[in-house]
Image 1 (cartoon, helix red, strand yellow):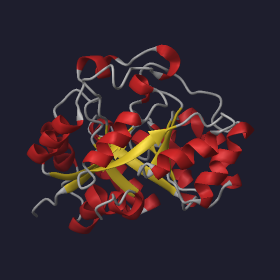
Image 2 (image 1 turned 30 degrees about the horizontal axis):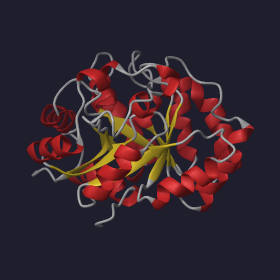
Image 3 (image 1 turned 180 degrees about the vertical axis):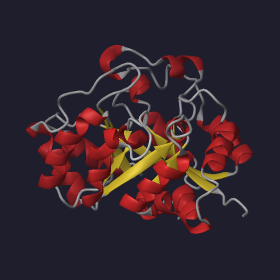
Length: 285
Protein backbone atom coordinates (compact mmCIF):
# COMPACT_ATOMS: atom_id res chain seq x y z
CA UNK A 1 0.00 0.00 0.00
CA UNK A 2 1.33 3.43 -0.93
CA UNK A 3 1.39 5.81 2.03
CA UNK A 4 -0.75 8.93 1.73
CA UNK A 5 0.56 12.42 2.37
CA UNK A 6 -0.26 12.66 6.07
CA UNK A 7 -1.60 15.48 8.19
CA UNK A 8 0.49 15.71 11.36
CA UNK A 9 -1.94 16.69 14.12
CA UNK A 10 0.69 17.61 16.71
CA UNK A 11 3.72 19.77 15.91
CA UNK A 12 5.19 22.82 17.62
CA UNK A 13 7.04 25.87 16.31
CA UNK A 14 9.54 28.00 18.22
CA UNK A 15 10.72 31.33 16.82
CA UNK A 16 14.40 32.15 16.57
CA UNK A 17 13.59 35.82 17.17
CA UNK A 18 13.19 36.13 20.94
CA UNK A 19 12.53 39.87 20.82
CA UNK A 20 9.56 39.61 18.49
CA UNK A 21 8.31 36.48 20.24
CA UNK A 22 9.51 36.57 23.87
CA UNK A 23 9.44 33.41 25.94
CA UNK A 24 6.89 33.38 28.76
CA UNK A 25 6.36 29.72 29.66
CA UNK A 26 3.34 28.58 31.60
CA UNK A 27 4.38 27.98 35.20
CA UNK A 28 7.51 30.09 34.67
CA UNK A 29 9.77 27.21 33.56
CA UNK A 30 10.68 26.73 29.91
CA UNK A 31 10.81 23.19 28.60
CA UNK A 32 14.21 21.70 27.83
CA UNK A 33 13.13 20.61 24.35
CA UNK A 34 12.11 24.13 23.28
CA UNK A 35 15.55 25.40 24.34
CA UNK A 36 17.53 22.53 22.83
CA UNK A 37 15.52 21.83 19.65
CA UNK A 38 13.71 24.98 18.52
CA UNK A 39 12.14 24.59 15.08
CA UNK A 40 10.75 27.62 13.26
CA UNK A 41 7.96 27.62 10.72
CA UNK A 42 10.23 27.46 7.67
CA UNK A 43 12.27 24.62 9.19
CA UNK A 44 9.08 22.73 10.00
CA UNK A 45 7.91 22.97 6.40
CA UNK A 46 11.28 21.67 5.21
CA UNK A 47 11.00 18.74 7.62
CA UNK A 48 7.41 18.07 6.50
CA UNK A 49 8.50 17.90 2.87
CA UNK A 50 11.18 15.35 3.74
CA UNK A 51 8.69 13.29 5.76
CA UNK A 52 5.89 13.31 3.19
CA UNK A 53 3.54 15.38 5.33
CA UNK A 54 1.05 17.54 3.47
CA UNK A 55 -0.07 19.69 6.36
CA UNK A 56 0.63 20.14 10.08
CA UNK A 57 -1.49 21.24 13.00
CA UNK A 58 0.79 23.60 14.90
CA UNK A 59 -0.07 23.37 18.60
CA UNK A 60 0.85 26.22 20.92
CA UNK A 61 4.09 25.50 22.78
CA UNK A 62 2.76 26.40 26.22
CA UNK A 63 6.08 25.63 27.91
CA UNK A 64 7.74 28.29 25.76
CA UNK A 65 5.08 30.97 25.18
CA UNK A 66 2.34 30.37 27.72
CA UNK A 67 -0.86 31.94 26.42
CA UNK A 68 0.79 34.32 23.93
CA UNK A 69 -0.13 32.60 20.67
CA UNK A 70 1.40 35.21 18.37
CA UNK A 71 3.96 32.97 16.70
CA UNK A 72 1.47 30.20 16.01
CA UNK A 73 -1.01 32.72 14.57
CA UNK A 74 1.64 34.42 12.45
CA UNK A 75 2.96 31.08 11.18
CA UNK A 76 -0.52 29.93 10.14
CA UNK A 77 -1.22 33.28 8.46
CA UNK A 78 2.04 33.05 6.51
CA UNK A 79 1.51 29.42 5.42
CA UNK A 80 -2.25 28.70 5.32
CA UNK A 81 -1.74 25.91 2.80
CA UNK A 82 0.60 23.99 5.13
CA UNK A 83 -0.51 24.85 8.68
CA UNK A 84 -3.56 24.85 10.89
CA UNK A 85 -3.20 26.23 14.39
CA UNK A 86 -4.21 25.43 17.96
CA UNK A 87 -3.90 28.16 20.59
CA UNK A 88 -3.90 28.32 24.38
CA UNK A 89 -5.80 30.52 26.83
CA UNK A 90 -6.26 30.72 30.58
CA UNK A 91 -9.62 28.97 30.85
CA UNK A 92 -10.17 30.37 34.37
CA UNK A 93 -9.72 34.00 33.38
CA UNK A 94 -12.86 36.17 33.38
CA UNK A 95 -12.19 37.12 29.75
CA UNK A 96 -11.49 33.56 28.57
CA UNK A 97 -14.46 33.51 26.13
CA UNK A 98 -13.24 36.76 24.60
CA UNK A 99 -9.72 35.33 24.28
CA UNK A 100 -11.13 32.24 22.57
CA UNK A 101 -13.02 34.48 20.15
CA UNK A 102 -9.95 36.64 19.47
CA UNK A 103 -7.52 33.85 18.64
CA UNK A 104 -10.19 32.03 16.66
CA UNK A 105 -10.65 35.22 14.63
CA UNK A 106 -6.91 35.13 13.89
CA UNK A 107 -7.49 31.93 11.91
CA UNK A 108 -6.69 29.34 14.58
CA UNK A 109 -9.00 26.34 14.63
CA UNK A 110 -8.75 24.91 18.12
CA UNK A 111 -7.71 25.65 21.69
CA UNK A 112 -5.47 23.73 24.06
CA UNK A 113 -5.82 23.19 27.79
CA UNK A 114 -2.43 22.49 29.37
CA UNK A 115 -2.92 20.59 32.64
CA UNK A 116 0.31 18.57 32.69
CA UNK A 117 3.64 18.41 30.89
CA UNK A 118 7.40 18.08 31.17
CA UNK A 119 7.66 21.25 33.28
CA UNK A 120 4.43 20.63 35.20
CA UNK A 121 4.34 16.96 36.24
CA UNK A 122 1.21 15.51 37.79
CA UNK A 123 -2.35 16.54 37.00
CA UNK A 124 -3.52 20.12 37.59
CA UNK A 125 -6.65 20.39 39.72
CA UNK A 126 -8.37 23.19 37.79
CA UNK A 127 -9.67 21.22 34.79
CA UNK A 128 -13.33 21.10 35.90
CA UNK A 129 -13.26 24.36 37.86
CA UNK A 130 -16.60 26.13 37.41
CA UNK A 131 -14.76 29.31 36.47
CA UNK A 132 -13.94 27.58 33.16
CA UNK A 133 -17.61 26.96 32.32
CA UNK A 134 -18.11 30.17 30.29
CA UNK A 135 -15.13 29.27 28.08
CA UNK A 136 -16.37 25.70 27.65
CA UNK A 137 -19.81 27.02 26.75
CA UNK A 138 -18.31 29.35 24.12
CA UNK A 139 -16.26 26.53 22.60
CA UNK A 140 -19.29 24.23 22.52
CA UNK A 141 -21.50 26.87 20.91
CA UNK A 142 -18.92 27.76 18.26
CA UNK A 143 -17.81 24.15 17.66
CA UNK A 144 -14.22 24.96 18.59
CA UNK A 145 -12.30 21.76 19.40
CA UNK A 146 -10.64 21.77 22.81
CA UNK A 147 -7.40 19.81 22.99
CA UNK A 148 -6.53 18.65 26.51
CA UNK A 149 -3.00 17.81 27.62
CA UNK A 150 -3.67 15.62 30.65
CA UNK A 151 -2.83 12.55 32.71
CA UNK A 152 -5.22 9.63 33.33
CA UNK A 153 -6.00 11.24 36.70
CA UNK A 154 -7.73 14.01 34.75
CA UNK A 155 -10.38 11.66 33.34
CA UNK A 156 -12.89 11.97 36.23
CA UNK A 157 -13.05 15.80 36.07
CA UNK A 158 -13.13 15.59 32.29
CA UNK A 159 -16.20 13.36 32.55
CA UNK A 160 -17.89 16.08 34.60
CA UNK A 161 -17.25 18.54 31.79
CA UNK A 162 -18.44 16.14 29.10
CA UNK A 163 -21.69 15.65 30.98
CA UNK A 164 -22.18 19.40 31.32
CA UNK A 165 -21.13 20.20 27.73
CA UNK A 166 -22.25 17.16 25.72
CA UNK A 167 -21.78 18.82 22.32
CA UNK A 168 -18.17 19.84 22.94
CA UNK A 169 -15.38 18.31 20.85
CA UNK A 170 -12.51 17.23 23.10
CA UNK A 171 -9.21 15.95 21.71
CA UNK A 172 -6.92 14.14 24.14
CA UNK A 173 -3.24 14.85 23.57
CA UNK A 174 -1.16 11.67 23.68
CA UNK A 175 -4.45 9.81 24.31
CA UNK A 176 -4.24 11.04 27.93
CA UNK A 177 -1.06 8.99 28.44
CA UNK A 178 -2.59 5.56 29.08
CA UNK A 179 -0.70 2.93 31.07
CA UNK A 180 0.03 0.01 28.73
CA UNK A 181 2.56 -1.72 30.97
CA UNK A 182 0.31 -4.69 31.83
CA UNK A 183 -0.51 -5.50 28.23
CA UNK A 184 -3.82 -6.63 26.78
CA UNK A 185 -6.65 -6.12 27.75
CA UNK A 186 -5.14 -2.90 29.21
CA UNK A 187 -7.24 -2.80 32.35
CA UNK A 188 -5.19 0.14 33.63
CA UNK A 189 -6.54 2.18 30.71
CA UNK A 190 -10.16 1.17 31.25
CA UNK A 191 -11.25 4.73 32.06
CA UNK A 192 -9.83 5.90 28.75
CA UNK A 193 -11.75 3.30 26.78
CA UNK A 194 -14.91 4.21 28.70
CA UNK A 195 -14.68 7.75 27.31
CA UNK A 196 -15.71 6.34 23.94
CA UNK A 197 -19.35 6.71 24.99
CA UNK A 198 -18.95 10.47 24.65
CA UNK A 199 -19.25 11.09 20.93
CA UNK A 200 -17.20 14.30 21.04
CA UNK A 201 -14.05 12.65 22.42
CA UNK A 202 -11.22 12.15 19.92
CA UNK A 203 -7.84 10.59 20.68
CA UNK A 204 -4.64 12.04 19.34
CA UNK A 205 -2.37 9.00 19.14
CA UNK A 206 1.22 10.22 19.07
CA UNK A 207 4.56 8.57 18.51
CA UNK A 208 4.80 8.40 22.32
CA UNK A 209 1.76 6.08 22.46
CA UNK A 210 2.80 4.02 19.45
CA UNK A 211 6.28 3.30 20.79
CA UNK A 212 4.82 2.44 24.22
CA UNK A 213 2.57 -0.12 22.50
CA UNK A 214 5.64 -1.98 21.19
CA UNK A 215 7.03 -2.67 24.67
CA UNK A 216 6.04 -6.13 25.86
CA UNK A 217 3.65 -7.27 27.15
CA UNK A 218 1.84 -4.58 25.15
CA UNK A 219 1.67 -4.86 21.38
CA UNK A 220 0.38 -2.50 18.67
CA UNK A 221 -2.18 -4.92 17.27
CA UNK A 222 -4.05 -5.35 20.55
CA UNK A 223 -3.76 -1.72 21.69
CA UNK A 224 -4.60 0.03 18.43
CA UNK A 225 -7.13 -2.66 17.63
CA UNK A 226 -8.87 -1.85 20.93
CA UNK A 227 -8.83 1.88 20.14
CA UNK A 228 -10.36 1.29 16.72
CA UNK A 229 -12.96 -1.03 18.22
CA UNK A 230 -13.94 1.38 21.00
CA UNK A 231 -13.70 4.76 19.26
CA UNK A 232 -13.76 4.00 15.55
CA UNK A 233 -11.07 5.20 13.16
CA UNK A 234 -12.94 8.48 12.62
CA UNK A 235 -12.15 9.46 16.22
CA UNK A 236 -8.43 8.68 16.09
CA UNK A 237 -5.68 10.80 14.57
CA UNK A 238 -1.91 10.75 14.43
CA UNK A 239 0.56 13.33 15.69
CA UNK A 240 4.35 13.25 15.72
CA UNK A 241 4.98 15.56 18.71
CA UNK A 242 7.87 17.10 16.74
CA UNK A 243 10.19 18.66 17.90
CA UNK A 244 9.33 17.86 21.53
CA UNK A 245 10.06 14.25 20.58
CA UNK A 246 13.79 13.81 20.10
CA UNK A 247 13.92 12.20 16.64
CA UNK A 248 13.67 14.15 13.41
CA UNK A 249 10.31 14.35 11.68
CA UNK A 250 11.03 11.83 8.88
CA UNK A 251 12.11 9.28 11.50
CA UNK A 252 9.08 9.93 13.71
CA UNK A 253 6.79 9.58 10.70
CA UNK A 254 8.42 6.40 9.43
CA UNK A 255 8.34 4.85 12.90
CA UNK A 256 4.63 5.59 13.20
CA UNK A 257 3.88 4.21 9.74
CA UNK A 258 5.85 1.05 10.46
CA UNK A 259 4.13 0.38 13.79
CA UNK A 260 0.69 0.81 12.22
CA UNK A 261 1.33 -1.08 8.98
CA UNK A 262 -0.99 -3.93 10.06
CA UNK A 263 -4.04 -1.65 9.95
CA UNK A 264 -6.31 -1.70 6.92
CA UNK A 265 -5.84 0.92 4.24
CA UNK A 266 -9.12 2.62 5.15
CA UNK A 267 -8.20 2.84 8.82
CA UNK A 268 -4.71 4.14 8.06
CA UNK A 269 -6.11 6.77 5.71
CA UNK A 270 -8.46 7.97 8.43
CA UNK A 271 -5.78 7.81 11.13
CA UNK A 272 -3.04 9.62 9.22
CA UNK A 273 -5.24 12.20 7.54
CA UNK A 274 -9.03 11.93 7.56
CA UNK A 275 -9.75 12.85 11.17
CA UNK A 276 -7.35 15.79 11.19
CA UNK A 277 -8.79 17.06 7.91
CA UNK A 278 -12.25 17.02 9.49
CA UNK A 279 -11.33 18.74 12.75
CA UNK A 280 -8.61 21.10 11.49
CA UNK A 281 -9.38 21.59 7.80
CA UNK A 282 -7.08 24.57 7.33
CA UNK A 283 -7.71 27.83 5.51
CA UNK A 284 -6.78 26.31 2.16
CA UNK A 285 -9.19 23.36 2.42
